Image (cartoon, rainbow, N blue to C red; front, top):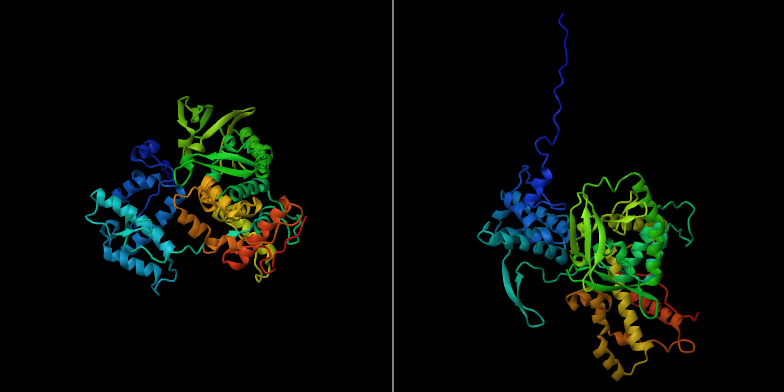
Length: 510
């Protein structure tokens, strides 16, 4: 009987014939973070891919690209159910989609005006490009001319919601934020004391990052992409605050701006750098992780007086240079410096492996901390526990700073009405000071969204408090007064979390 043999064919590598994939992607304009969309029949549209990789869409912030891509998928699926692809959409299709997305009883997950407007902005960007590029005769997003409150005539989408209002805007008072940090990030118990069962390995990193956002008003990506030498060092005259500078490429508006943080917050960052971060770098160096990265740039120096320029040498020995202000978030993640034991990342916030922590990873850190607060402070699901997101830190910073600035101008400085008018002519109104700190182009964004709890209140009446306690008041009394004012605003407004909103705040001298 002949012997039966099993013949196993030679295995073929999954990427056989695609060894130059990286080069081909580079020629096609496909970079890390570029979305690739497949139709339900698993096809890729060449024109749509061109838009996603080579148009103005490719220059949007990573989080904006993610949001817009989600909006595109929803509309394209809606069109597919009608037997159409993306560039066959008409104005009637868009109006039907608007009805289904915002009001239809057939849709169990309708959205509000603000969420609809974001998706409409995404579609307007796509179809404006498609029309100019000749892929469509007319955009389905019809527009009309309107006059703004400042008298400027602008083009606006007809389907834009008129009653758009962000329902996902929340704030924390400083003491509510402190409770969230202690319980959610430090592992404290409901009694406010450290728990022996807590095993948070990256506590100092997470606390330092959250406090940096809350104290500075930076956006998530802005704070997450700081380099080690961008940690503020220069102190203001009084010594309580340090001043830093955000590079224009990491900001949403693509305009650099100054930010301020308390020296205590900078101290927390420095403690993290010297402990947890140094240990993670040491482990990565011992395992040779940095040398084995496919792409890295060893910084050889930062030069320039008026504008800092970063000089580097890459893994192939090729020399390069670029202004610090022009380095993108992804380029910053490639920067290393030569340390005592080998190369070290210049990216400030690292994961346990010693590699740069992606900005979007912070969302999970905040979610886990809020969940722990819920479990520890409201185990039966009946009470209220603080929750926080990275962007809530920015909202809360705005509210806190407005109250502090009004307190300084109106109360602490003891200015007369005439002196107050002169002060504001010289240094600006507190509302505009907060606008500058946040980097907003339009003060209405600052007033109507970030400072909604007080936008319709008379600040002079709100801040009408008894005379300072004690001889001349003092810093402790001043801080207590601001705390009381914030607690009072929390009682009178929706969306502001305070640790004891049911009790009337009182002022006590230290």
